[in-house]
Image 1 (tube, rainbow, N blue to C red):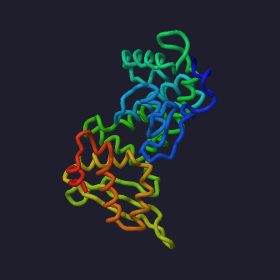
Image 2: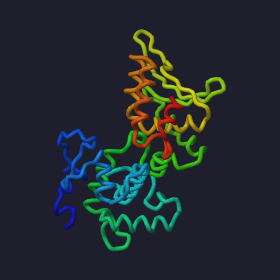
Image 3: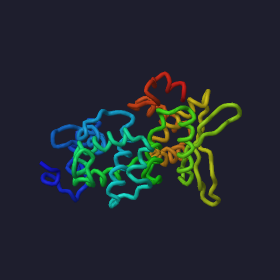
Image 4: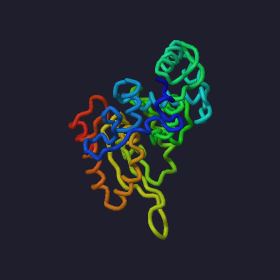
Length: 271
């Protein structure tokens, strides 16, 4: 059956997911009883059958940009559908066939023309739930690249962090790379702090043995940009040691760690 025959096509994809109050760590439940962390995970893994991985957000951003470039009715996109692939013709052809096979575009095979009702619902959902790292970045190749830093070289990671710092420059609390004497460091900066004379203050700082370790930690922070304001408020109100302890505990319990080979020992070295 077509999507519009069993779902309301005017609502975002995943509107049927619900919570049941069970503290399992995965709050969303679908109609088959499967549990998910987010609606994006339910779409990527449950609907598209793709594996859970650190590249999920990058690939969902690419899919959203592709659908938006075809439709251009829901989300403004910087490039055309063709430009999103940077001249990689084989990848572009394969990708279009894959999207069509998933029922997200319609028309004649193998590439389809226009997006389907489910493709439109998915586009609305993906645009509404974009990660905080890219909400201020126009949809397109740059936003896709922003969500995929860890697989690149040290120079590519550093360039990605440059974009993160430029984008976050207006945030009330933000993490910045620093050089403290001869050691690389990450600093937490707060703007407009204090009552009578608001000041910019460095609230927290951590040094590292080398740039690669510092940048790896900064990437981990950047993927949690939505937590920066809360962490900044914690350091401002309760002091830097409290934030250090909190970050250490978060690192120790994070599923993805700092990279694919991250260990508790690595976390202890960093903090």
